[in-house]
Amino acid sequence: MPAEQQELWESYSLGVEPHRPPFDHTTRISGYNLFVSAYHGFATLGNEHVPTPRAFDSFPPFAVDLVGAMNVGGELRIQLQVPIAPVFHPERYRLLAKIQLTEPGKGRNPGLMRNHLASPFYAASTATVTIPNVASQPEYQVHARFVLLDTETGYRSQYLQQSFLMRL
Image (cartoon, rainbow, N blue to C red; front, side, top):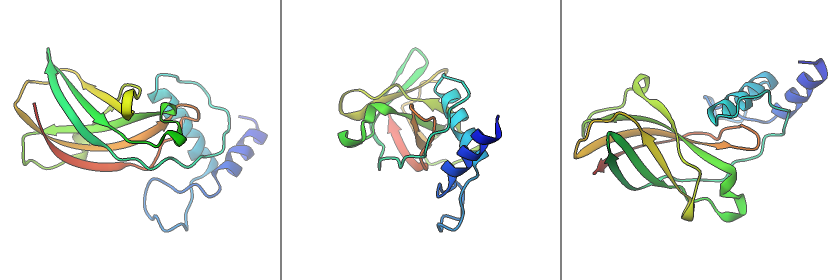
């Protein structure tokens, strides 16, 4: 990458907080990390390419609520509502869910969590996460970390961590 482009990435990284502690506004990421974040985001979205430098936009506040779930032929489909105010253009974002399914009451093991890209948002900011090859059970303990991926920049939001009991 030309030096001018590296310097541009570095200038865009000023003030961008890392996704790891400390979260005390005293640290930031490097231009290289911002580039890698964009590259990885686009690759996760299925659009792998060398990104052009873009300033980091703040992400909209978001929450994730379970709407329902069903097992269809060994595919677990989890429908989630992710309310994002229309002023933030929800269609710009995709939800990435890092999920671990366990028996009810079992704890989280971060090493067993797997990435699942949700469908694009549709009516009322609803998206579906599909997990293939899942044995049918009446209920699951779900441990998840959710992030928003920006489809225009490839950047990702800070994560939202949740655990919930899901009955089919």
